[in-house]
Image 1: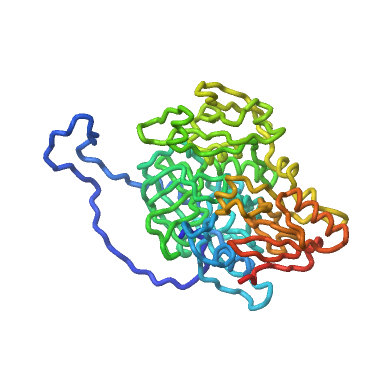
Image 2: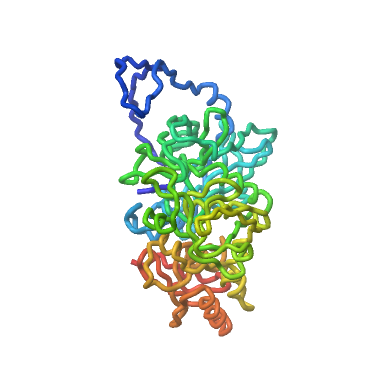
Length: 515
């Protein structure tokens, strides 16, 4: 089960284990003759790292975050999408939030739940980075500094697609802060430390190594996670992951646990390069715009590579790159002359491993930027230049209900996208499902209040089947023209349910009761 790491306040029973560990080790095994070509590890005494100085330097910039969360949002975080439980490998395309014990503050319809997470200061004037799910649905947020000072925090912006949020506190003086490092320079086997607020125990430090890079958790085309074995638990969400130079290379966000419990040494951090891009935009505008290329990529199997006459980097390994299955009309890719059958191998000189890797890199580039793709066409290398498009603008052009599905009653606040082959793969859908996928929901909008979530599939409006975003927009227009709330039939976690969206947002017709 993949789980997020926000935790609520609860009484904790602590068990202390004392483990003796050496600070150095020596290779005392007699040397043996290695076969020709065998890997020969370095031998001799290797000192284990001492993190004392590093922790003293970075710990003052790590904070604990307390959020007063709307109870219904907290219950969704606890139970997972649709409240169904489950985990990776059980048919869900999205990671599940970390379950936590809730402490209701008031027994009334608008009650809140107090929960805790972690964060870190990135500027002396009070900007704080954390996970979106730490503050999602929060009516009040406070930040506790390392010295115990508690300050009210304002949410500057949130980006659910990358699970990054930016907060701001107003200190009486300058605050200690830490810098974002270059996550592209991180290597498997490298020592890292995590600092955070597990189980409400602020200022906790754990250490481990980078286990793997570029982990695709099927949580959308926006993140490749850093996998680490440093113990991270409930409440570590939003805390920094440091390398030995004191730079932040990731935000600790999720763990895999077989039963939703504590860490078993498989944790995931959002890379700092993603965080830097998102935070920069949130600080300037409060929202995020993403780059757009306009191709549908397909991963290359060994058999396909043989058919395309592609060379693998190593014998038996799949070749790097993504096969262009189709090119969207009017897209930056079409304008650049990219064709179906091309193989994209590099972006701005950096290798592309697969389609997901290309998608993650493209969306992180600001629209309007000039970029270069390395291609193989008929086994011959070539390069093409293109101007990165605006993914949001493309969503609008292809049927975005946020700007298109409106009348005098106002906007619904939902963005739609087509069910492409990659979207079907990520959502676990076969070709029999026809509809439009909810790409984004504007916070506080009528759609948000009605309980519509990213990842929902709109298959019909009223009695009219809607196989595309444009069809949804047309039927929503019609309903609003008749001054009726659009009745959306959606598919969520394999179940169909109806959601009526009041254009004024005054009638919450949430779908949470679906069984």
